[in-house]
Image: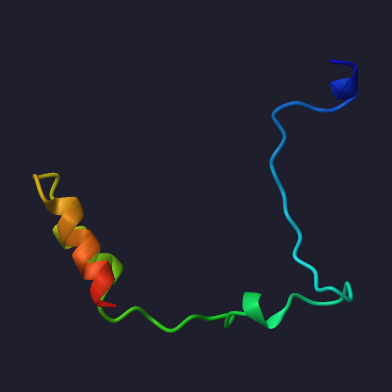
Amino acid sequence: MAATQGRRRNTVWRATMVSRMGLLPEDDFWSPSCPPPLEIFSESAACALATGKDGALAAIFALFDRR
């Protein structure tokens, strides 16, 4: 209990990515600032399948798997 005294509770979790040299994230974490638009698994395609009926989640996953 004494170890948690002085800490704020219910704070937002945060993470910072740094390289081994402490400068920039490694290439593994790089992504373009503007990702290309989704062609197969688009928001409109997923919303069209999200009917709430049995099998809708499986259909959405199958669409995601096609990407």
